Length: 227
Image 1 (cartoon, rainbow, N blue to C red):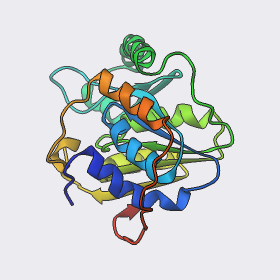
Image 2 (tube, one colour):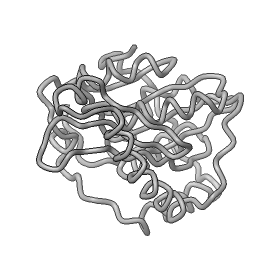
Image 3 (cartoon, rainbow, N blue to C red):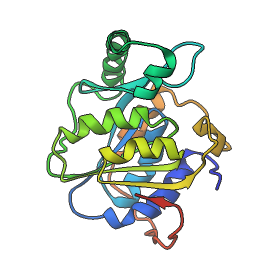
């Protein structure tokens, strides 16, 4: 399965997530690209949309991904990556603290200081793809501490490794297409252009406008992957 762009991926993912429609649901899009996918999900589910920031931690010129830093003080370090890169946890956490300031800056640019109210709600965290799983894991760990009634991860495409990393942190994981050899989420898209801050802020503004009538999607595709 290939996706034309993130909007196409979001509409397809929304059809899978329709059973969550109704009740107290909050949709969070992982910045950057995940917010475009999440916009379509929130629209279909008639649910509030907000952004959540989680940044991957790389070691320049090296693989694999070291981990990720999420807003709200979340740090995830991949134990396999620490071993493969020969880094101590102390050194890795020092790198994480440097990334945390970048996360805070991006949160200020996109949303401001106020966090969305999540306690007691069903929270759907959406990204445009899951490769290492690090950014999703860091975000899910923080979101769990916000006491949602249910915490769900939805992605159009993912790797078995990334999905396995994220699964213990969520109550459910939904993925439309599993690609074991995928090294970057862009491989599953025809159009995977970068999204500037101004476009992300516009999505959040549009999501708060009164909903226009639209044909309700029907979740008829039982394929894909669910955990």
